[in-house]
Length: 374
Image 1 (cartoon, one colour):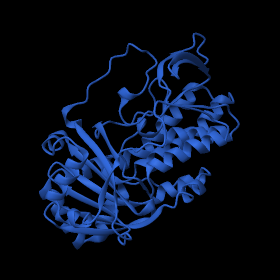
Image 2: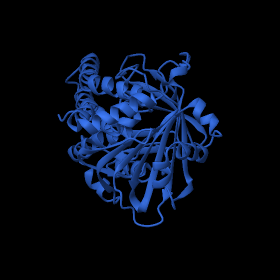
Image 3: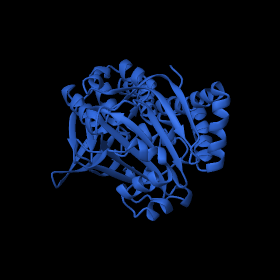
C-alpha cells in the first residue's frame, strides 16, 4: 500500500517512477482490512480518497472487545472508519499509479541493489519475465513490509537474522460470506489463549476474519487457516455466534509468518523505508494502514526536495528519521503495552471490566495508540 501510494505522489510531482513488486495483483493479504478514520483523512490529503469510495467500502463507527472470559467492552471510534478488502484496494492503487504515469512492474522481484560508484543513485538487478536485467535510479525507497529479510539490501551478502522466539507469531485471514445482510457494522476483537481474532465487514456483504496466533496455538489448531479460525470459535462463543450461518470462502485464505511485534522503528537502512518497513504497530490497534500512509506523508516531501537538489541525502535522512521517531514513538509504546495485556487472559478481562466502569479512561488508552493529526 505504501509503495503504490508513494509512487502516485511522486508521479504527481512529475518524476519518472518505477513501481517494482514481486507479487501480482489482485491478491488476498493477511490484514484487518480496516481503514481507520485517520487513514481516510490521509487518503483525502494525498488525493486518493475517491478511489476508495469507488470500491463501496463499509462504514464502521464502533469497536467491541471481548475477553476469553466473555467480558466485553464497546467503544466508539474517533470518527468513521471503512472496511475494504486489500484484494480490491491494493490492485486499485497499482492501477491508479499506472494511470498517473508510473511504470508498474508486477511479478518482478529485485535480485540485487548496488549503489553507483559515484554515489549518485543505484543499480537494481531485477527478474522480469524470467530474464535478469538492470535498472538505474536516482533514488530507491523500500516498502517491502514488516519483515526485514523480505527486502533487498544494498549488499547482497549481508546476513539475514532469524526471528526471536518471542516474535514467532502467525497471521491468518479469510473472508466469510454472510447468510443475509450484515447488521453489525462494527469491528469485533475476540481474545483467547494464544491470540486474538478481528472481524470486520468489507464490501460485497463479506466479513474479513483475521487472526494473530502464537506458533504453538497455530500448530495445535492443525496448522491451517480454517483450523485456526475454528479453534478460536471453540474458545470464543461470541465469535462462533457472529459467524453462525456464514460460510468460509476458501479462495480468500492467506497466512503470513513470522509476524514481528517487537521491532523498533527503522525509517532508514541503506535507503529510506516506508510502510511496515519503517514502523509496525501491533495489529490489534487497527492503525497499521494509517501508519503506512503517514510514512508517505512524512517522506514524500523530502524525496521531492532531494530529487530537485534542494536538500542533501543526509538532510533527507536526518529529518525523515526524526519525524518518524516523533510521530510513532508514543503510539508504538502504548500499542506494545496493549499487546502485552492481550496475551494475559486475566489482565485483559480486568482491563475490559475497568473500561466498562470508566469508559473515558478506556477511550484515552485507545487514543494513545493512534496517530495525531498533522
